[in-house]
Amino acid sequence: MPKSKAGAAFLLLAFGIAAAQGQGSAGGGARAPYRIECGTATALGTAAVCRADVSTYVGWRVFHAQCASCHAADAQGSSFAPDLTRRMRGMDSRAFFAALDEGYLGPDDPMPPRGANPDVSRYYNELWSYLSARVSGDLPPGPIERLPSTGFAAPD
Image (cartoon, rainbow, N blue to C red; front, side):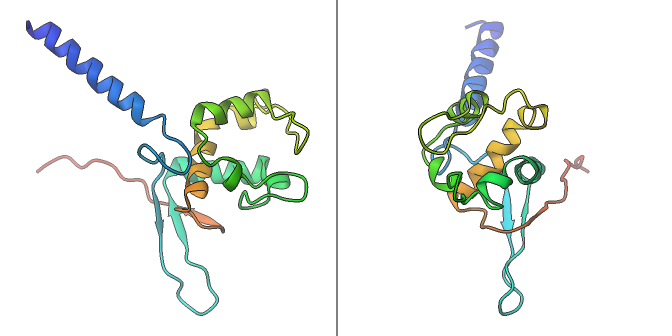
């Protein structure tokens, strides 16, 4: 095979693998769209502090500003909005994004479409990251902190 065709085939394969990894489902499946590090409780009755990557941290902030008034602070639901840690089990990112765009207008727990709200629509990936971490159980209830940004150091 000529070099150009071999290179193109490699790029297509690599792109296909990367695309497949990005279509994970909440609560299992492909590689997680987040990075979470939780410490241990330091004293009796204190919660462990968890830190998250920037995307997940932003998702947590957006969730608290836009969604928590109905779905509660840790996405565990209220008397009028469902527990998203249960509702999203097995849901993939496409179904999640569609639910945000179209809303949920079923007989129980209706939710208006959120896609027209720029304070939500531009953060779909971040919300997916945060809620995926909550659904999987990797991120327990409670406040989170942002992990320090990591860069790539040049080799010596």
